[in-house]
Image (cartoon, rainbow, N blue to C red):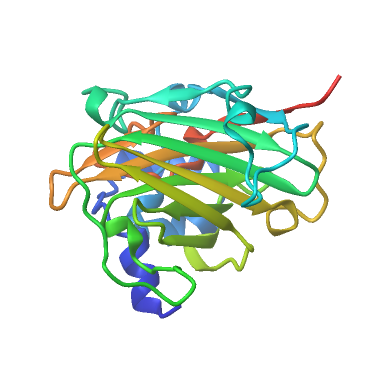
Length: 263
C-alpha cells in the first residue's frame, strides 16, 4: 500500500490532538509513541475514565453444520447474543434507522461475524479489485470490526470492513502503519431494499488472526458503522471512543471479546 494511502486512512476523521491529549498518552504509553502521535491524530487515546467503558461481546461455539456457502445457518446465528448499537462514536445521538446488530460464532478454525444493518441511504464505490478488496472503503458506507487477539501492544490490531455491495478490506495496523493483511476472509452480503437493511456474514480464518487460537484467552475488539455520502456522516460505535471528532482507532476504548466454549 502506498504511503499516501496509509496517511489518508489514518487521518480520515481529521481529529486534532491537543496538549492535554499528548500529556495523557505520555503517561499511558512510551515516549517513542508520544513522538509519533502528532503525525497520526486518528490514534488519539481517550481519557482514562472513558476507557473503562469495557463492554463484553460473546462469541458462541458453532456446533451446527454450515450452509451450502460455508457460513452458519440462520438458526445458528440466532444462538448468538446480539450486540446492538445505534448511537454515535460518543455514545450520543441514537438513530434507530441506522441501528446495527452484531453476532459472533466460532470454531477452532474460523471466527464468524454477522452485521445486520438498518440504513437510510446506501453510498458505495462502484469498483474494486477482482476479488472485491477495495482500498479507501471507509469513504463510503461500511461495517467495521477491529480485533486484537493479543493486547500486549495496544497499537497492534486487525481491521476488517465490508460494504453493502460486498466489497471488503482487511488490514494489519501496527503503530500508525497499515498494510494488507491477506487474512483469507470470506464474506456474503444480502441487501434488502424493502426492509432497508443489509446483512453481511464474515468468515475469518483463525490463522489469519492469531498464531495459536486459545478460546480460554479473551481478545479486545470493537465494532463500528459509517453511513453517508458527505459530512456530517453517521459514525457509530458499539463501545464509544469519546473523541472530539469521529475516530475509531482508539484501542483503549475496545471492549472485551470472550469465547463461549461448548459444555
